[in-house]
Length: 155
Image (cartoon, rainbow, N blue to C red):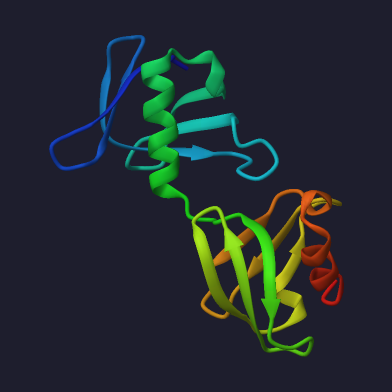
């Protein structure tokens, strides 16, 4: 498998990858193998047919220009805001409306049921709203005490 030497957006806004062997591939997608547990490791560049072109062990192994392009491609593809604090919960019975501060700003969403809070690890949770949008709580112990107290009522 060849190394990624260049990643740019073409005129259509699609990613184009150049590999160490000189081959150029249009309409590539950059994906994480483990987006929650290891977001900077195990990244794959795949072609429009889903075939893997390149495997990146860690983004830090890339030169700055390629690393910035890879991170940009990943951010454009993924949408999972991180909950930084829970400001308010309308009710401890579900459905309930939550007001949270996220990595993308303040947000209100409806939690349909307690089963929509999934534990990924001892410290990590994924909360899905009524529309299927998933929110990440990366490090539960690092949340403020008020947020943890509200969450404890649902866990």
